[in-house]
Image (cartoon, rainbow, N blue to C red; front, side, top):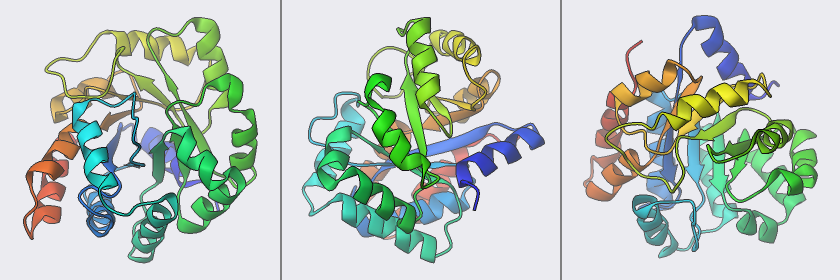
Length: 264
């Protein structure tokens, strides 16, 4: 079976549309709610879902996502438990491509081969490792490649062209272009650095390029689609999850996610 990420971006390109990629943290506020959220978000027009693996030292994350990780880590949580909710979501009909957004240490501790086997079995389509540099990615990429899983790599505006070339060579699925230097978090206006970075990346890859960090409104998503293949929204959704713990929270957060996707 073809990787769902590849199929989704091919469909988007054929339709002349941009992709919408919501992000949530697994286990925030608990794993059962996370499972229900990814199923709900899948129904609300997400083209790819990013599921964050909570980590105790999330250096790339801003205050909103750091707080979500802290809330999640107050509960019993593990890579195995996160993969289990992905499998349960697939069993409940989730068809949207899903990637895990993690730091390398939790996956290394789990075991690279074991992780890839279990991720494939659960229905994960790819992995983004925030702190995995291209010079050290070959072994893990090879492990993922043979199982048809994607390794999404991060690219930053501060990277040299030579480094962008290495990042593109190590990546599969799509490239995640960081819109600006710094950590995650909402912003009133997008940095012009993102469009420049996407243009530079196009010189080195034919892979789709998604832009993230700082995108929090439908207008910003639509603006990003003007030059990139997809837009990632994280902190705005995570903040909604933190603010709403009522019985109908999953449906209300799903409605909020719907408002972030331009009706193109």
